[in-house]
Image 1 (cartoon, one colour):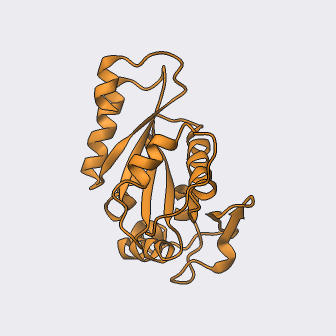
Image 2 (cartoon, rainbow, N blue to C red):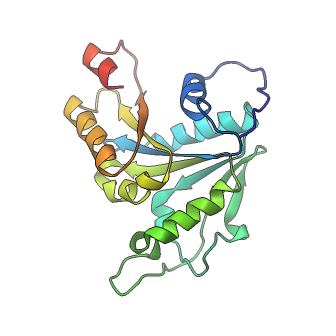
Length: 207
């Protein structure tokens, strides 16, 4: 991935993460696909992903796509590629989403969607969008829907946990870390959402 000019602007809350996780160790010409999973349920995850994506697209002049994995997994996969009409541009930047506006999902004899049933299909999907975008930000939902994460963890570049201040417990965060590794994923770090107080020492060690 070629180095991109950074537009001078006010630093954001995501700047440190972008420099260390997204741009750190970047290989020229190679995209990065990062999954986000909340621990436990956190309705702010889409907002956090949108904020990071907007920062990457506008300030760092990157081409970014946001994926809602739950929606993608239920799509009607009639062809072995992402239809051009499914790409939607967000605002006036190079930030995109992939949407499907069909009423049914294609399932095999087991009742599973093609996405769930075919690992090779998932690999081809990410290969296609890697060729189009610098960064792929994947919303995997919550820890309760860990099957979404297990389907993509081995074929993406890393996973970031979203913890909720005052809600996420130490045991939950530890379990989430173990789950990422069991799924074959690479844990990149954690985001503590909603913090208004100093971090306890045990949480510093886990984040």
